[in-house]
Length: 218
Image 1 (tube, rainbow, N blue to C red):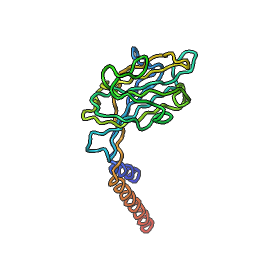
Image 2: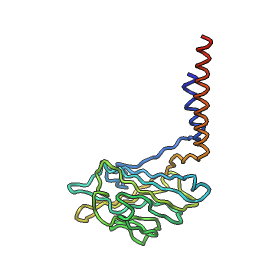
Image 3: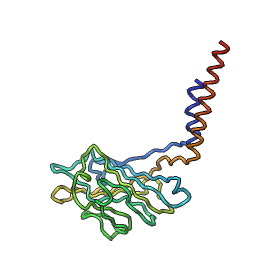
Image 4: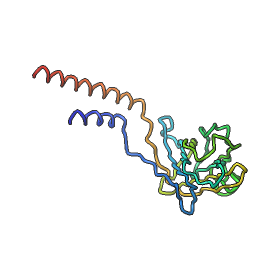
């Protein structure tokens, strides 16, 4: 029993692991109309970002249960509404970042991103293709970096908006629903990784010495 507990505890202490989780919304959002999708919105900070107001924001859309009637559906615009941000940059997207245009001071309506309404960042697909087709087993994942001195991490303080169209360009609906911005586990510092490796070496050395002593005394 002692051996089985020692190794996990050493790893947890070295990494500084804490509980982290991500509440998702969908496939039903009531009046928010998730259209059968499941949305997860997370934030994290790397060691290079710590001590600053810079965050990495990740939006994952699981569209395997998308409800679109009789035609194929495409995600044509998406916007996580995170109030207080001072700047945003799309760093990863379905297809590539070059497949999406950006509106950094507008909103999202039935016709896509626009420069009106309460400011929040919004990205529109430049075309329809396999990269933004929904009802796929592959999630649609967007990653932004933002500057925000007061990240709204309270319950339902952020929100998701997403526009879907059929192959003819007709709107299939707009998701607009509140969501809680959840923290992902932080990236271990190099010093933590060094501590982990040192701890593992020490643990295995102690276990080996204990085994050798038992054999010698037995």
